Image (cartoon, rainbow over all chains, first blue to last red; front, side):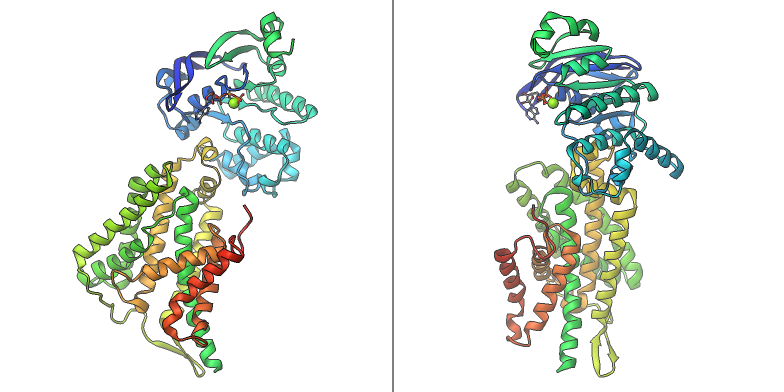
Length: 236
Length: 288
Ligand SMILES: Nc1ncnc2c1ncn2[C@@H]1O[C@H](COP(=O)(O)OP(=O)(O)OP(=O)(O)O)[C@@H](O)[C@H]1O
Ligand SMILES: [Mg+2]
């Protein structure tokens, strides 16, 4: 469904991705793990057209998307929930959700249906729908970011560090939700995570990044028991 | 005495609404791009010249037709400004962005001077006359200004709160990256914002013709005072521009009761300095 073929991405003179290739199939959850500065977010940004790779191509459903503007990538159904939530602080929770559907031309009824789905996933958002997003707690903002991402009926969802800064109970809830979205909406999900154990547990496939390169990839279950991965990312 | 005060209040309010619209016009650009548009007074002037000079005087079209055609021209001017100045410059260092908008203004200024010369002219019969309420005499131009300004403010508010493009404008103000990730074409949205801003400039330029005549320098003072109004009310915050504009307009207008009117122009800037010293966030401004 998504195929990234040996891309190089730079920030000015600094090369952040080197010859990165990643394949994402239909309906699977794929984990991307690696330490700080490994290039995980840069890979996501390259897919979204927030930065453009200098070399290589990115194909989504057989179409090259690596030179498109971000908004056009979104129109193709690729949705990125960036690290750090990035909700619209001065807009209400409801307005934030509505903006999630910006790329779609929904009828009032369809929009209502999407909102119900979002509130069903995160009932807490419904209670706070009139509240400004900036006044939500960090965890609630993360829920809003995910719910907002789902409003446009994505064909591919990418979550960047959804567990960052959340309490352990909420982290479990968050990963449960990701699995639920994957099963109910039948869409592939890319999960970028520092929390490698969780990411490997819920995913079928994983890519390990280091210094701008993919250094290992394969079946998540196998990776979780590999001694190298254990040592580097799972704390022994 | 009471009549004098009421008259000053009405003319002060009218001036205040002019400043408020100036504040709104440049705040829209500031909010969307983080750029101070130093060409805004030239765009106001251009609006007056296009409507009054080109369509009305040169082509002899009726005022309403001239005005509507001018809207079209000013939308194009806004698109042009966004495409050649705002979008390319907004990620650069301040010095480039300042120079960029100043030079854009300079080009407009020279263009007007080339086409129309530097002699000021008036539009006979435009918003002239007075209305009498009891013994109170009010210039019709003041009434027009207040009514038009209120309509513009209300229309803008409705647009920003209810339309898809208006909501997207608020998103672009708050977070450009997240806006792009919602599928908003940020460059296009900034072009639309610039078009709205320059149409407001046209309205300002047109409204003040009875007060200042059409001349190359007609907008330099209101340009500065509108900036002051924005700071006094709360920088970058549209309701703040309205409050700040009216406060500055009323104080300026009332000042002639106590000081010679030649110093009137200094009053707005005195208010500005006082606010910068005491409450730099402005009357309605939030702490950032
Ligand atoms: N906007 C930028 N400008 C310049 N360099 C950048 C920029 N963003 C990231 N980098 C650099 O690119 C490299 C990869 O960064 P990236 O954000 O992709 O890492 P990451 O794997 O997502 O890390 P983390 O887990 O901390 O989020 C880092 O060395 C970083 O300093
Ligand atoms: Mg990252």
